[in-house]
Amino acid sequence: MNSSSTTTATTTATIMSNNLIINSSASASASAAGGGSSSNNNHPPPLSRYESQKRRDWNTFGQYLKNQRPPVSLSQCNCNHVLEFMRYLDQFGKTKVHMHGCVFFGQPDPPAPCTCPLRQAWGSLDALIGRLRAAYEEHGGSPETNPFGNGVIRVYLREVKDCQAKARGILYKKKKKKKKISHPNT
Image 1 (cartoon, rainbow, N blue to C red):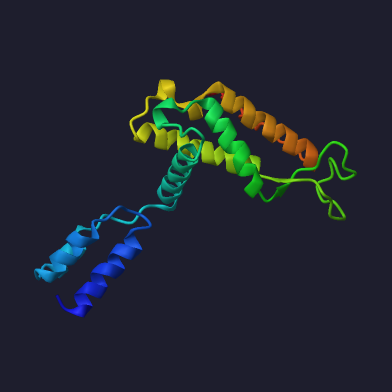
Image 2 (cartoon, rainbow, N blue to C red; image 1 turned 180 degrees about the horizontal axis):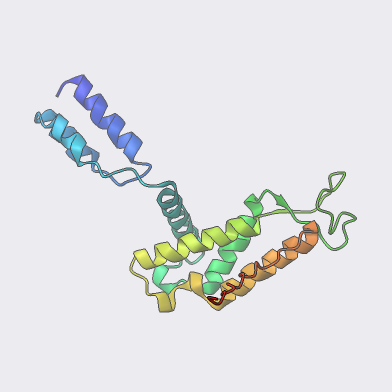
């Protein structure tokens, strides 16, 4: 095997390892056998941004479950683990959520900084749960037992949404569907 085919195989394995599980030794041996050009045609198309994010979220949630003491298997996972995961993610949030005692509570654009905590934004959590719900079913879970689709999760997300809206002085109003007006033929 020459050094250029080794470098190509290693580079391909490194680039693709972020998106797919690749057997890099098979790729390297294919290059060594003279099949370097045909092995490049076997790569599946790149994942969409949504699919990549869904895979990242799924792996992150799986790692979170493994890090629990004792570790939790996916088959044992329930809505309480999902709630704990969302609360855990709050520490990485970037959305300022004013507390009831804060002088800026209810103000959309506070004039000065305060010590209120940063949290995950409601929209981010809602999108995360949607991706994890889809990933759960793609990995063989049934819709009936999907912990991400549990009513408790929907209630929690609604509470987060309402709390953040009040704290920031922003009202989320449900959009009403416009009624179609039928015009009688005259």
